[in-house]
Image (tube, rainbow, N blue to C red):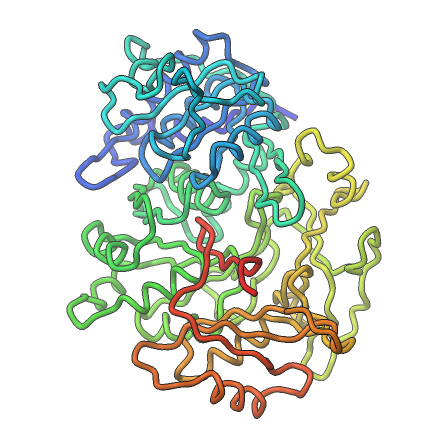
Length: 528
């Protein structure tokens, strides 16, 4: 253990490249010196209110410079950041504030929808520990729209742009990231300063990041989520890069920003890549986009092979696919940079991290046999992870922690995978998404990959639906390609020809859109 504060990522670049652009939003450009100075003002404002080492401070903010300023200000004060999904409703915010014991809360005006009491105050009765509420307003000089609360601008006014960052141990909690809560209430994964640091610095060997030749990152992944936070914001700041922010992902504006700002680094979830491909028009200068773009990274969910192929065909850049979870800071494995990509693989464990496949039965930790089948692949097992990226545990949830962390430090992911003879891993599916039809295990991702080879299929999501005789039946929810003349019956018949009898979908539904989370993942639990 040693002294280390994650805020040093910003401080080092501010000292080395004070005049270099750190954050860009539209016509606003903030240098590293400006972002660091503003973060110091936030730290001073927190310290003046008695908030410091060991305290928790929540933050709800879209991809705006305010996010980075407040995030690093909280860290400088020695407190832990609790980033919250901007789509949460007031009741859900109250839960997160209470569960994390947050002492203060920074919220961008309008996100989320706050519960307002009869007297005009923010109604967070359940969050007794939350003593301070700061409203982040688009206009820093505007008064707070909620009576009795302070705006970020008011809190920073008069505060010095210098601050002696609080000394923290590298094993202290830097960030608490809440899981999506697909089963039960969301849980807060406690990530140490060293967890977050090592994940950010991994950009040097994962992507060839170089502070002397800095990248320009397009920030479309929500910063409250681990992927955008570690790979884009923290990874960008660690190597003096410029982070170009887009508050909400829309494919056409994203392509425009990539051209305007000469973006060299794009990271996104699979649906974002699918969106970029769909937004291409003859007017877009794809050749220039391709010349500028150095790295394309994907994670968050499995990348369909067809999307991978089409993106490389259009942009001339091979997508590097990685894997991780909030509980692993998040990156645990990645496709090696500069080496031929194995399409469909999440690559190899990153440096300092181990992975293996274990019995997916809850409570079982035995390794699965390493024997290879005729295709050179192991049998399916649950991915387990060990190393510098793994969380401390779930905040104030010892039983939940014990269920996923072994005494010797292995974390069970809940994801099912296979491994080839060279050690590369391949995601099969989430264990909870697996369909059991007539006693046969059916993996939705496999079915989705087959469906997306049909020329009339743009995007597919496969789910299990209740069935009296078979237990579960297979249903495919499909977005067709533009102007595609295809019927549900035709896709049913085609699927029957392409897949084994126990695999092909018996139900097909054509839809214009699919429900997605704020991070761009398909919300299968909302399909039926």
